[in-house]
Image (cartoon, rainbow, N blue to C red; front, side, top):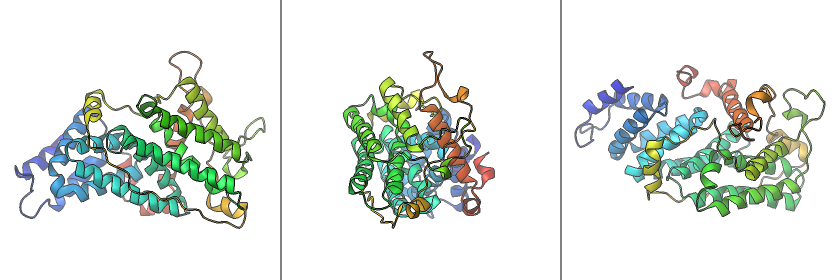
Amino acid sequence: RDDVMASMKRQRREDGSHGGDGPSPEDLRELRDVIIHCDGSVNVLGGLSKDVARDVPVLCEEATTFVMECVNELPVKTPVYATLVGLINAEAPEFGESVVSTTTDALNEALKAEDLSARVRARILTRFLVMLSAVGVVKSDEAIGLLENMLLHALAEAKGGKKGWQPRADWIAYVALAAVPWGGEFYSKSEYVNQFENVLDLADEYAKKRTANPDSATTIIKSADGNEIDWFMEMHARLSAARTNQQWNILSIPAIAEPFVDALAKTSNAHALPMIEITTIAYANHAEASAHYPGRSILRILDSNFTEGTGNPDAWGPLERFVAEEYIVDTIWAFEPGYRRAAVIPATEQLA
């Protein structure tokens, strides 16, 4: 990829204009290719971020589009793209503002829809916003506030007690809590730790309000002992254990590369979140609501020896299995037939 970046630099004028007509189609194809294949290494992230930051006046819209394609279609690389945006934003805040605006617009649309793609995108985009707060692109208190608002909405639905309230309320709470592993380590050590603790308190309160009722449709393979676990309570138990043990460091979530930590911490270019609306959707009964918002699948294809700690200081924490399952669900969705036909980034490129 260094050859591609060098080619882009040669074609670009010293003023970053790419000539009077701006970047050529070939420039854009090369930029998209480099972003797709960004591996998160210090050299690639450092070089790519500087190139894009310099060209933001003429490439902002296109670069935003390319990054958002990758965020939506390569969600296992969320930390990589969050770091890339953070580095560019530190030098060119208008790019960070563009990404935040595009992300929140997409999240608003996803939160209103009921189809599978929208449900998955809502989770991925919320995760991305949480990570953007950890790299100085989004104000941390507002990112945590988004999680709080989602849980408050779920609680309001539970207290309202209308017919069929729980499936969508569970889903809204899941969207919020599924993002916590990607921000827990940062938030637990930040000045916003009390606000983060409130998110976990709201999760506890909601867990007490809902009805624990294992849904057979969310069980991929039945347990050997016949004791089926409520998917939400299983997730909540893992978050509670991480909170109690202060084990927010997730080995399968790449940490921000050391050379970038100080630069991102010093940036003052964090942006406010635009309004994100969480609407109430009425259903005639639980069955109708469940058809639109089935629970999260519990996967039993991973042996617990690979995902559960053994008690030693270096053991994996309680959230490792949850994150691994989230990665699997992301990947399964990426190859779902209806989605695959419409994919912007072909599978061959995703796996390259």
